[in-house]
View 1 (cartoon, rainbow, N blue to C red):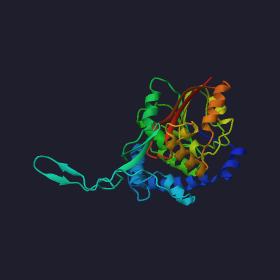
View 2 (cartoon, one colour):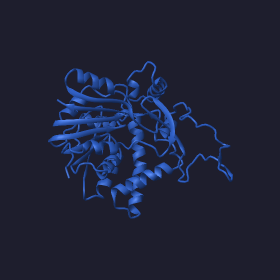
View 3 (tube, helix red, strand yellow):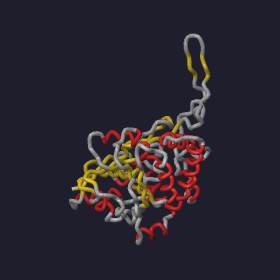
View 4 (cartoon, one colour):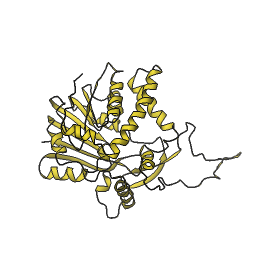
Length: 330
């Protein structure tokens, strides 16, 4: 395991002056740390089972029924609005065959207790699908990692560490994993999960996108860096972030799975999706410049921007669909 020194100076200033969203997630990850601690105390020793049992408890909680941001919405006093389109009223649907007819009474929830319907976004369209239909981003990363010989994997804005646990167990590379997270409670969660496993290690360090400090990361030749709905809550990322990431190793591949689709302007196609997305981000004070930063640094020759996909990873949160950007160091 690598010893991580968080350093001081600007980083200490950042941690002492969290934004409202940093503060919100500090409390959120702390409450989730307690849930995972209870699961471990019950006798669970496999980190993936702990993560999956935790996620199941969140899905089935009375508050969940929508992603985490719904709780934050109420806390921040953001105006309430309808969050998903309702399916067609089918109160009198009949299943008919030659011998009988059966009257079906539709249910809001599935037998598991979770909502039966959820509005999804993919590319430029809304659609109502099962709440169990979602893009598994760690499956995507696992597929991407095959045959690319990465020597380390770094997640920035890693939350409680669940993505790294899932990536490893879903076929990710057997290499050192690093979890950069702003909140102390999120870092504690990752350390708790790391303590359960002898097969792989999560090396945690405190990280702030506004004041990027990578001094604790060892030198490697070929690494994967990724973000997953973490730049989302950073209103404007600084000009130095992407160049600093590109200098972490001789060969850096960086993947952003972030909701920046509204930053790709559409005149007609998907206009409703873009307008809802943009309004939601403006109200929350969320990221406005990830795409701009990628394009600027690509045009300056600082990075090789290989792929941009608008809302291609979609998601059950139709006000924050996942877009994809892949770039490499030069």
